[in-house]
Image (cartoon, rainbow, N blue to C red; front, side, top):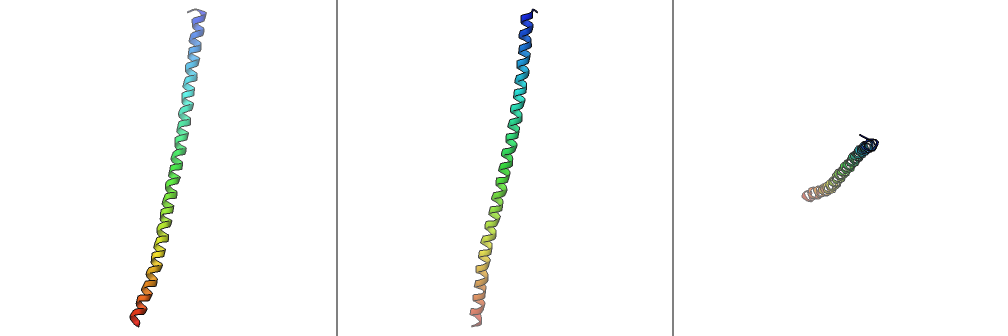
Length: 80
């Protein structure tokens, strides 16, 4: 191999190494991005669950208040 071919082979190896490093960087960035997206989705699901639970508690407390007041009215009506 003459000098020029050695230089070409060396440059090709350098380019391949840089390409591999770039691909690893991109894979790592994609992995970090996916982890972040998964975390955001999990937090959103938790928020939805908490909101649903609060809505159920609110609805039940309203229903219970109405049921108690109706019970009282029925009891007083029977006594009359």
